[in-house]
Length: 81
Image (cartoon, rainbow, N blue to C red; front, side, top):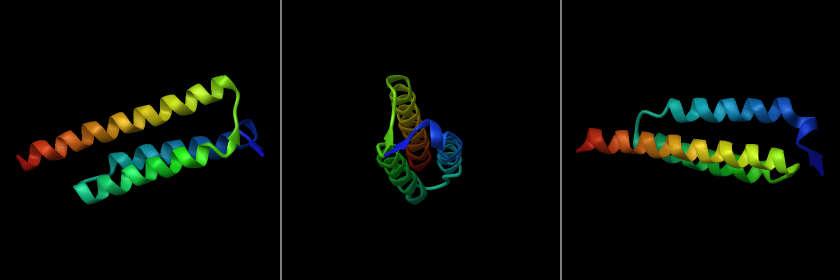
């Protein structure tokens, strides 16, 4: 099994890219794709052997991405109303 530390640069690149994907959403279809992207990232991160500290980092990042998606979703709902 791969370790989190040996793939750290790649994982951080994925996390940065996920943030950019969410920020670039301009309609609800793109936002739906961003939700799937976060789901895929979460599933991908389970393939790595992680220490408790690394586990907490991953959990926190996924939670922050979900929060970003909620905020972006509310913004789209406000525009529609």
